[in-house]
Length: 298
Image (tube, rainbow, N blue to C red):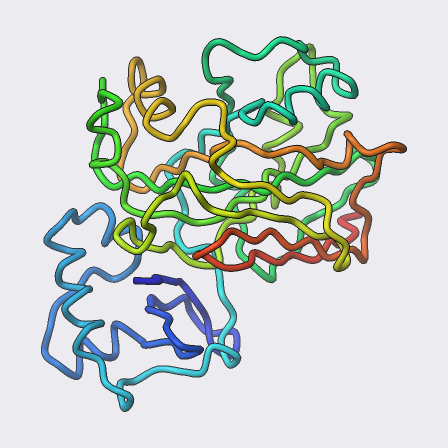
């Protein structure tokens, strides 16, 4: 299933499923059928297998006359607001190399995943603006990443069991103000408002045959800047989940952003950055495209 959060004509957020260019209004369909489902995607994730099964049954029963909208008539929002977002730095070999040349990071491959956080206030949806505040940054950069949505409380999970804790997958654009790193710390550089575009949908894990064989790409104003495949991750998804949960509890709805391939703006010769008026689009095979305009925040 492709599960989304959306609005119509500026109204309240609604929970839906998207297929074939159409959005099914799940709350309206549940009311029509006398069914009970959670009131939003985060509630479904937290509700566990029973909640997901109830939504799946409803979606599978929806006919062409089910209440809903054309996809073109709705505005998508971030699918959910994670409790926490854990970013992975330097997780593609070529990105390690370009970062060492331009961002003063270590040229050696990391021997453990490099972790950082983004606050929930940074999360925004497809179509929503990325804020460019020229008083804070002249080096606003992009990073297309596969996002893993956690579906079960996870602590000290083995690599062998890791996929059992995945609810689904989405896209994250790890926006970064390269000139706001502070003594090697990335939180403000990567955690400002709007620096975590997320979406356009969460695709349930059963729909993604192999999350480690997905093409991903990113364009700025239609020009390709990043093009790779998730098979090139240095630390694969099971390793990331095992490493994080060795000392930190992941909760349902938390998101791991699995790292960026090469082709970030800071790695270009000369460097290229995002400016008001730009449109940046991150695409992951089987999930869709996350598109955001850059606007002046001053």
